[in-house]
Image (cartoon, rainbow, N blue to C red):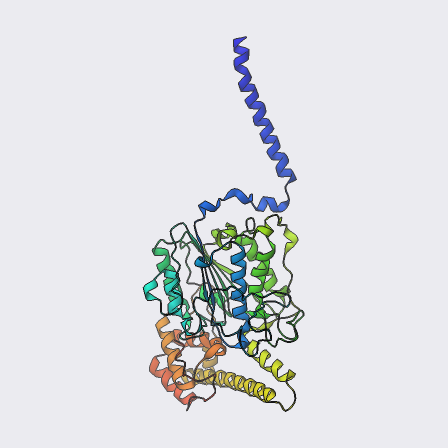
Length: 488
């Protein structure tokens, strides 16, 4: 009898184990396919995440670049609804759009045709001429003493914290634009990220980049092992795209004469607004954004790429962006892919022309507004023609009529950085600009050609001589003016 009673606990244990295992199998059978992809929302406790930090950067100014500041303001609203505190969100934006005379809704910025105001409440940490590469790096490194102007807010992060960086603007091979000079060069960005990693002041960092040729910022430069995961709006050789532009469907409200957003940016933000970020991973957002940004494989789209420590893509989005409680009952399923937002998109580098043309088209015949729009359009076109011609001529002067174009158009194999000597690239850019005027936002498309001249062994003296022949004088166009300083 004693032996029988002693055996009861063992039998009960085996029965209970069997029931638990059966229940687990039953639960697995009942789960949606999405539940297999996403562990339960409480798998990671908020206390384990540390502090979430975000740095948001709009790298342009001018009303024709409305969309970049709209993107950044929208990103702020997504993070704010996700629970991030203003003290942990650092915003860089020139802040010349909301109250610009061209803005049909003064004090309001929208990022989509049906969207509300995204400008309200946005912290103005670094505006105007304080939106600089220097301040961005200092803020990211937590170096308050190095900050010049602005709020002085920095990423004062610790080893258990998570950092999200989002950048939106024009770009070129190896560079990202800023509303001030110099440009943000890929090598200095990479050195800063490595310094941040060496300081042991974050657990993981996610970087989203909206810009033309943005893949070149990380291609061959971002190593594994830094706990950094990056995605880019385009590969290393193609443009990114503006969306919700005049002529699009859906387009902006009729009173707007500019693009409201960017294709990649609209994709990740609109995805973040409708999904449960406690269950959706970086990888799933990447796949959805990649599909939408390709725009069905049409010519109005680009190839979204990922770089760095791709294992981090398994992380839940809320570890970086927080989570809107209103979405936490949302169940992710595979057919929730975002659809392309418009019938077509506008090449980032042509969005200014779209604005000038729309302004010209709508203005009354013979009006001052129509003449001004025509002048702006012609100046922009003249600047483009001048730069395109000058770069081609420099290549021919240096390497001959046949070999010159071949060298300028060379694209290195995937996995290799743009240039071997970044100091040479800066030197040749500065030398070219001294004779031929500023590259400006359009001229960033020629960064690869100038990098190729470095890779082919061109010296500063040779570049100076060729540029002087190609450009006997610096053009007087506002786009070519050097009054703001050099790009490098």
